[in-house]
Length: 525
Ligand SMILES: Nc1nc2c(ncn2[C@@H]2O[C@H](COP(=O)(O)OP(=O)(O)OP(=O)(O)O)[C@@H](O)[C@H]2O)c(=O)[nH]1
Image 1 (spheres, rainbow, N blue to C red):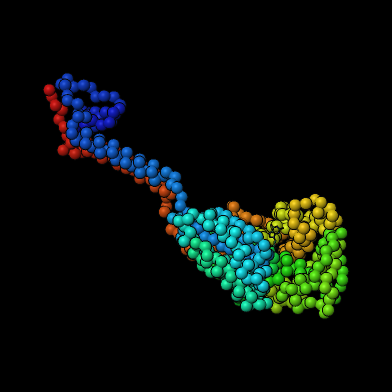
Image 2 (cartoon, rainbow, N blue to C red):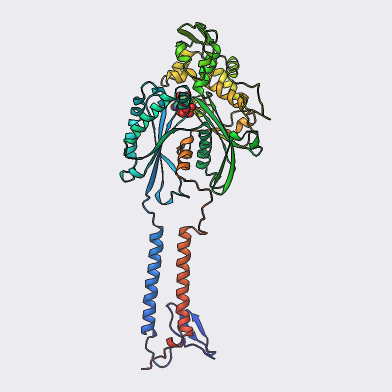
């Protein structure tokens, strides 16, 4: 039977040979032989192994430390211009450069509100549409690091304002786009074109944005619906388990994102943004071409001279223009919420529905489901009215609106001296319109109204279609879930280091215990 020579190990441990011949690890030194032995640590093999071991441990620890050191992040960028009916906004998004095709989180780095009105308002002076973008674009040049300029995609998406202009005068719409494209090509970014988004795209990308920012897509959680109220159109998008696509295929958008399939219901109502809805409500009240209207949606004491030509300029109302009206009319307020709701209801058609169920205007809508994020003008208006708290019951919302609408105009102006008079005068109408659209239009009840969250942004990024649009065009959301390694990086390095250390100790022990080549007879001097 082979028993090893008891060889030296690292202090403070000692290997001592028992009478049976086996070696035992002990903290006590073996009894000194009567003969004087040469120090066994000084054998060449032991020294070489120890040095290699120490170098290996130092190397492993260095690698582990370096690997886990926070590295200076490099980012990539994307720019999207939201050319809306009321104004244009620019957004810069950034994400870690090394993760751009799957796991990296895209965040809004910067936003800029273009001065002036939306690009559709420049139909008669298209070159000014291009010029209007210069200030925000120049700021973008500073915001994006120079070395990234040429690879930063730049997109312009136009929504309902340009949809309406295109319907009304497609030549004028083309000229506005030409001017805008020429202006954007003058910047050092990778310009990817300017185009009108369909209402369906606007709704679907708004839904993608909200659910992406909430991390619902990556984690495969139940999604939240998206309610977007613009100036000229409004969108509703949600996933409903009871949505039979065959009933209305045009409202369906299907996605496969991170390995999950989504069948989204979405609809965009052109002319039902809050500015166009106000024009429709005014058109309803001026059908006969009166000189004065007493509008329940405006505060008592409000008085403004308005022009018929401006009111009926929009294609949403132009067909209803009264015959031979006077040039102007006096727009006065009565401040009555209930009567205002009656006026607002007139802009919807609730009577015709060729489907199993409808929202309004003969548009199919499946049963509402889950929670909703309501953004853009939903947020601006409800935030001003202090009605964004989801715990406020619908009845209380209506009461507060009634009290706000009844407040005299001069009092309102005094209470809010810094707010633009145009915005201020319209909050009574806008609030009433929002409540009516949600309850009478989309069929939210007192109960389901509590599922609506009025939001401006999520985790620092604005809610809206722009982020979803860019994520789609840059393929930033994979159809399949990325294969993630079973261990995080730090865990992987730790496991490797500990395993290597254990192996090293094991090798040393086995060398001395089982390898005859390493047997060393004590030198007797
Ligand atoms: N009170 C208030 N209203 C705002 C503000 N910004 C925009 N609005 C108004 O809110 C409405 C919606 O604005 P946006 O979401 O920018 O809509 P848009 O993109 O111009 O319109 P669409 O082309 O229909 O999408 C418009 O009537 C704007 O005039 C704000 O800061 N405060």
